[in-house]
Length: 353
Ligand code: SAH
Image (cartoon, rainbow, N blue to C red; front, side, top):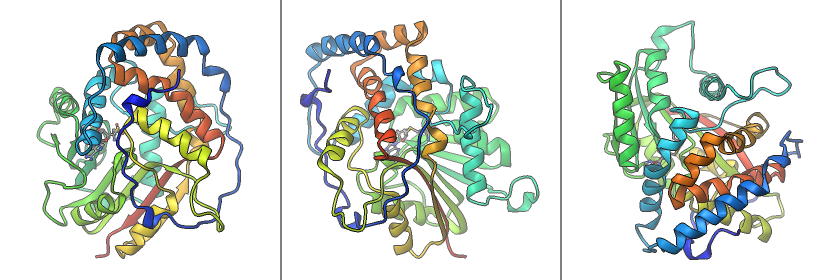
């Protein structure tokens, strides 16, 4: 089933001014397995989606729709995700040609955090004095990164999310792990953060940037709350960089991303090169980026496998429309990566001292 047109979010065309011509990275072979986009899974879950949509026609309201949609999407789906995958709501990192277990999701997700810290040159074991002490987790989910980083570095962390259910669960998990005095979570908008300037020595955004309708504002807020010398880490979904002769993506690519946007409450995408330009425009230093798509290739097939398990399928069928639509879009992510349209990007930088 195609995702329903009636639920189309009123997408703003965002930051078109920054979508510039960039070189096209070399094609890379990605080890995706297409056999996992099981048609029986899609048929069963689609039928349930149609039934739910008939009962709950979506309310479209031009302005608040994206934020409201994001909040409701995560309010509805976070419990199921936690039940099946745990408290990290982001891709796993799978070193190519290694023997790591694909079913150990948590290990892969922790590896993602560790690799991101390493890429950003955060001093790890050797020099405790240089460890981050005050962290902001922008788009914190149920706080997996905040709690992990707080424990790793002995740091305080504060997380923000649009979802009240996530903030509440994140605080409950912190309390149950004895971390309530170190980490806290609240509902707040990443584009208008409730923090004064220059507070945090690590600004962390793990897979939230793709939800931001104004990438320039997003990045400027990350830079604003960063303390002098702080590290900013953005791990996010991007579209491919544009080639030197390209003004925009191809129509089929736009169409493909639009379907994913509809399902996951995402506004227009930008490329990794666009992020780099934005960071440059803010005079941030040591800007680095890398395409980690090959390292996350096994992730969506693994998510689909878990959705196809008895626990996954029964949870999904009991869940709401937004969660089901998200599940139906998973094969589109696999296809987007395979066709080199979607890039899993890490972009890091430092605020000048
Ligand atoms: N970083 C978390 C969760 C990723 S899911 C993890 O790795 O586990 C995306 C998160 O981004 C959700 O918590 C969602 O509420 C948050 N988000 C999306 N748009 C946001 C915004 N404008 N302000 C704050 N949080 C936002």
